Length: 396
Image 1 (cartoon, rainbow, N blue to C red):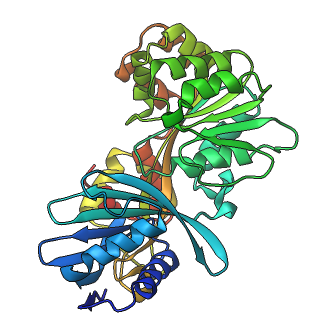
Image 2: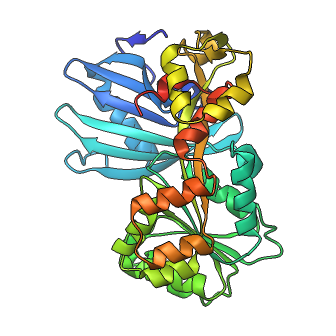
């Protein structure tokens, strides 16, 4: 990948348009404007990885930052405090939202722009790489049209797309669907979408109180961190509403512990929780990838995790894909990303151990007994179908 070196920028508007257009065309999720002692670097985050695209002399730093601040309606002369702003940028007749964040550093200010270019056609559960067994569990839970459904995992794991896809599963003309978001990333017809604004006291808990007087059928609530909002969301699920909610937790079993930490009793959790979707994103192999023989180390992993599935799938084909390099994948061997998941349907057996203050070991044993796949097993299965590769898995 070639880094573009620039000494002096003559036309700042033209230069930033070039940067924005390039980032959007490459489906970058973020643009990083990063000042160092001698140079000003511009990096793009693509498929979860960061790459340098521009190296510029620092004489241009002030003008670049000032131009971005003007576009995002921020205070140009405020360089001591972080600021947040927004730009609506037009690319090929499409308006794209940029979320702008500035941050004071040792050398000038750092600016990060989140590009909210979304493909609304992706908002379909059938397109999110769920295993068939997991997709059936999700659709089974959605048929109930009530209870609490949690989507969990760290920031940047695609929870937004999954949540919108869950909402998009319903016909909005037949239901009263409302959301509270921060920010609103997809604009969906026939759905009442609202964005929090804590500066004026319009936070999650105040919104939920008001929304429950709006006769809702389905509620989507962005991440809940405080006890008051958590209690309101659980009460909504108890009163015949379907509540979709994101929460940060590393594993499906830890979700329950997180709810307990928010002072939701195990009795209430067992009565409202119906589905947990844990997920993250891994890089997808580029079309330039070729088949290669499986190594002893890779085969050892399958002996430990999914030996029967491995033998059935590969049979006499003792090979996987391995990554090559081409211009389309920036010589990385990967292009785009796919989801890997853990999906748990909370049936009577789970209800019982939740009420009995379960241990993580009990939870995992129950999952294994019911034949659920862990997120790592989901990953391994997708390597068998040559969607991703084992080197990403090996650190785990």
